[in-house]
Length: 181
Image 1: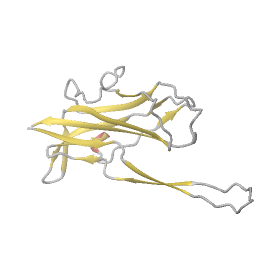
Image 2: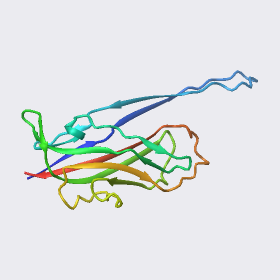
Image 3: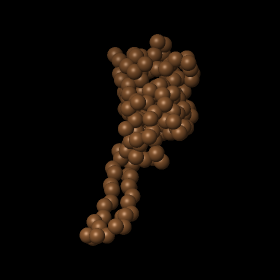
Image 4: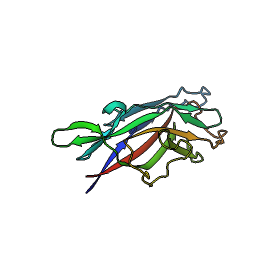
């Protein structure tokens, strides 16, 4: 029976609050302004009953990678290693590395409050074929026990209309792994 598990490399909730000021009639001063951000993180790993996706070395917290952003909107990243391991649901025990079918489920990219729809984000597995991007919804051709993921955008973006060019970018990749018991 196939069991599916879902791991989110990074899952964040952002709340944005802005301040405003009312100027007195005839007052030409410009009010100060800031944006405040809160971010929350839930568990990186959602185990199945027979396998679990972990970070490198079986760590239950999956590492966060860095995006290397360029002024023209292109970027690449540092790698994030994922592993599939045997998992005993009743004992909550993580076991040995176990091969599984991996699938790229989704990619989400946010650059502050900016719209970044023109980005052409690709996800690569450096342990597989590092020249061929993963295809959303397509399972790996072979069973793999680990992946070393990097992301890349080679599509230059028109940054002239961006309101916040100093914003922090965040990219989330969701992977699933299936193991036939």
